[in-house]
Length: 608
Image (cartoon, rainbow, N blue to C red):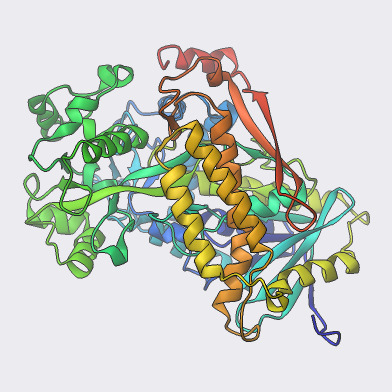
């Protein structure tokens, strides 16, 4: 680091890292609570991963089904999560989601409407009733537009194309963060007693993923290094339907709305195979023959087609068909809506999907089926937080959205992510602001020595020795390791092999070398991202090795059944040592799952 370099400094009450749905909602809440608030995003404002969420926002509005209410939504969420959700988070989410949706509408979000003029709602996997408020298949985009307009018009300070490398502490409390401008590489110091992590997911550690380049697990890693704990990192959702061809777009999401609006899954023999994979757990609510499923579509009989089973069930079924040799030419299966809906219906309800396949794969989905396959999509695990406040174990550090754990249990239902963002983003922002205000004059202060040390660590790739490593090659090896050894189906030997490989990559990552200077240097950016991706990948493999059962997004060949013991246990990770001072080591412990109160437990009596 040049001796003459001076750092840019900013002082705030609350700093929000991440400008997707959770970050924007947290920033608005903190600002409206009177806190001086900064919003940091790695990319341009509006290019959040939330934009890629297409299907809708799950909320029990009861516009299509008056029988729907928060209790049913709560039960569906717990059941979809295989009862490993934190009951309090699931309760708050189900209760507050409708109010947050109507709030978005008040802020200018334009939802599709029913003939009666109410917000329209569509079916999604695992939801008993049609409850996803939507805007065609572009719901995330409209949600970000409304939230962004609210944030910008409120005068919140936004820092774009800025990446946070470290959280800074004063004793055991958060004191701020160190970041750098992606354009120039110059460092920025934020002094703030409260930091909200809203950094999203971890999918770029896998080779086939629906996630964009930002999803490198920054928040998970920042929290671990700051002394927070991670909860249930073994649960990674592989969305059943991602594009498999052409290779340039492999993994790109195909929204669940296609199945919610009538699409069915077929193998290479043109068989609608999901009827062969209905678990006993879901028999009572799922149609068990084609005629009944078709009648459900036409008459809205309250029985679900098997294509709308929870995502973990559908992904495993697709994976089984492919492994049995009944896959499509490019290694997936077929998703067919063309034979079941008119071209006008498809183009009206699924405009993004129509254009996506037409432009990227030269496939007209109104005339022919899509080729799809599972793609790494969402992390159910994340930072351990208090369900009401979203506070981590580190004073002043909060987390909301995908980076936070507990809400979704072992498997997330489609549509619950968008309502999760706005319900808990609001709570995180409000409580972070209240915490900062409550400190009065006793605010923590950033230590200059910590800033210098963090900056030197970030610049290490420019001064690598003779044993130089290429960040792009290391990233490719990590993705192949996670895809092959810690994917949809897992077993002990492969996960131990993955952990050995990750340890080797961490050792080699000490010698990452980049050329050029700090301006516009994507190799340097990736070198810094790799530090986070390696730690998060280690967390996933470690937790997956610990949990000796199959549940939700975690399936083990060597423990193929669901174990009642593990249904009462969380797997919690803490960082005890990191590369640079020795091997990266994680402490693993089992933690009893909180029991719901009797009135909520009664709702779950038939959900086992």
